Length: 177
Image (cartoon, rainbow, N blue to C red; front, side):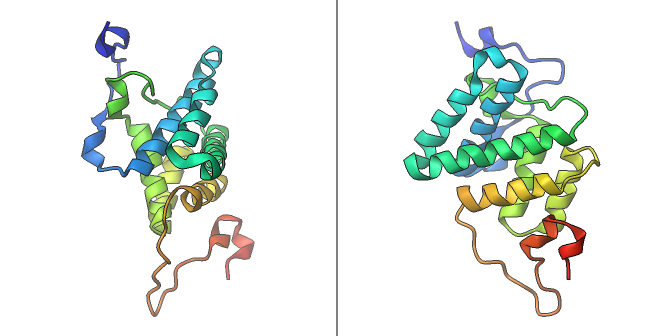
């Protein structure tokens, strides 16, 4: 039985080939972990969270893996709390589907990439889409923490006239200067 035999594409299709996004190995690992958590919520009997933790440990090691597993779960949970509609994702264990990225997954990964690169306005736009215009600060906070744990982030570069926002921008408007 091949992956295509096991997993028929649903009505919305599988998405775009993952190669089109040039994700780093770390980004692919984060996406795989998130997919296992999504599976846990969509089909609890599969206990995808166990595979999510195992993937984090195998890809990031015994020290960073647990931190990243929890950070991915926090991002998934905050997004779930804000969304009203279904989040479309591909099966992490299907050898065919796992090589594609759904539009929802692409938006999540774009938000994470933007946060990791200190592109806060872009991150806010992606988060607004993911949260369906509901409160997105918790998701931005969770993605910021995830980016700190999973990626080697360069120091933020600030323009002379407009410094990059501090992390407190996600906590609440009252903390903005």
